[in-house]
Amino acid sequence: MEDLAGEGSALARKHRVSIHHAAIASVPENYEDRLTELYPGRYKNIRLLVLDPYDLVLSKLSRNSARDREDVQYLARTQKLEASILRERYEKELRSCLTGPIERHDGTLDFWLRAYFPQ
Image (tube, rainbow, N blue to C red):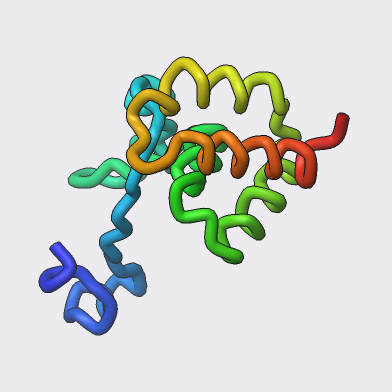
């Protein structure tokens, strides 16, 4: 797909939009049920789907880079996310699927909740 429609391709130049592969390490189990279509019915041959904001936040948990933390802070503020929903989705749908030391992921979530989510 990136060869056909990636940055710099003929399709990208023609339509001024490109495709970029983004590997997501971990998303909650039922994320597909919460995908939202952007511009429904606007395009004849393609559907653009985006993650629910809570699922997007949780997809950043494993990497937890500076950019990820900025994204989490922005989403928490602009989408008015609730800490209780994020924690519940983490515990029910993501925690058991994560690799590596679970204490690290628990600690990252706890830090995010304290730092970015109002009490």
